[in-house]
Image: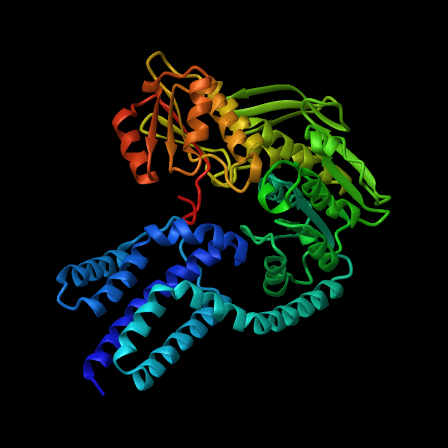
Length: 513
């Protein structure tokens, strides 16, 4: 047996471990959905340094005297070790199982090639390395029955725990946007009277809720607030079938994930799966300022419906709304005055939804006022920081057309001195299907009317945003095109000075370029 083949196989395995982690990382960012992963696959793989590594190894087989191929491979190997991602790979148990199966498959192919492929052994290993993403998908298919069995066990265990907490009040919170903020604000207010458990972070899928129940729910909890996310029909119903909420909040219905839902009607129906899962003695709390909520005719539950709004008529309506550097103040339509450190109409709506639940659960008004005055913005959801005279509005999480419009309205109304600038940094919106181009063009028009300077990041939506900015009348010296967030920050450093206000509007994950 040629020792050079063994050496090649060992080196290839080292490269494979790095490339496999990258492939699984992109698969995780695509929510383990084949359709989303395939949309990333072609452009993502062409530009990936990981793929350069594999290609260099393959070239080195056929042109061993080509030093350039080896140098490129080694360079890519070293550089890839230092490569940083905005959202790193999370090594969950599922990822570990997938990684293990993936490595076993590659080692098996290597072994067969070394033993039986003769002079073609290196070629077989090199081609496998080049198409490692396909191997990863095969590993996922192999693991699917195992994952289903494990998930079924976890589901039944979570169901047992929920059913053993007979007096637990379960509140579901869903919406195209605003659900995480509403969940956190509601928890802050209800904690004045109750012992609360909240689904943490972005644990808003069925598996995330199951994990929260199994790891954190205890008999002493009185209220369980469950954030419910969805990317396709029945996602919310599955969560409701597990936790059986008696109170439900729908914060907004918009065009988020239109690419997977296909129509706004499907989004409406899915968000209202929460309301339609409520019992007759339950209560549904819905945003009457959202046109796709206020006009929805598909409610089948006999539960009580409470509406909240800023602009339209509602059971809970904010009046005398005033915004300032210290936050906002408003009156409820019953005359009570409230103050908050939060900014923007979106946060005001989230507070109103929380107040409706608090009243229903008989939290005293004075305790509500105290809690609302102490509420802090959720990180990356129009939170504000001031440093060295520069104000940063961070609305970088999972942006959407309605939320971006509200954030830009806050930026537009922010007081600046003569010579100071209102600056926005954004890559626009994704996963909006056929509406994506027009939505990003409208974003550009809003930017032109709201900001003094815009930095458009990445290429995904660049053409649409720029067309909107130009249509909005902005001069070419008022915007800058950046190929990456790092390049955007470099440009920002050149133009920024004390007194400026910067809005970060969305931050695309690493599988969007």
